[in-house]
Amino acid sequence: MAASRPITVRLEFSSTFEMLDFVQLVSDQVGRSIGLDDDAVHWVGVAIRESVINAIKHGNQNDQGKHVFVEFEAPSETGPELLIRVRDQGTRFDPSTLADPLAPENLLKSSGRGIFLIRSFMDEVLLQRAPEGGMEVRMTKRAAPATSHRL
Figure 1: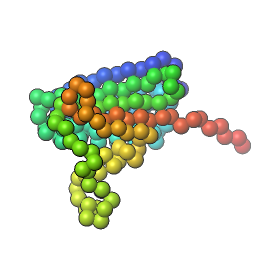
Figure 2: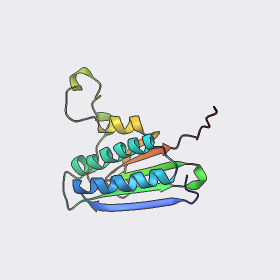
Figure 3: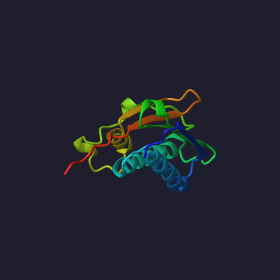
């Protein structure tokens, strides 16, 4: 059942990978509360994990003195959709410089697929410089309309 009231959850934590499971739990709960199906909840969770890992590892350079900010918003007036913002306190990077993970020379590399996966699993993705500083990933996932089955 989808939430009828707007939902906003804001998290702030030190750049430590131990927080990934907690962020995942919050993501799963918010996703279910707005009516995302199990598959969508799973793929949103993958996108969240990838974006938080990128914020810790690449944005904040594993500096536990820097923070990661994650915001979940489900405004009821726009229908069943989840807006997510993940922000770090790192220096700016240019998303256009990311290598194509599907290029033959990159297929066997152990990293470089996070942004590709996030874009694959979410309906909208925007990477930009955050007004507060650092980089941010803004993601949107819309709940699929319920279908009725007749026998």
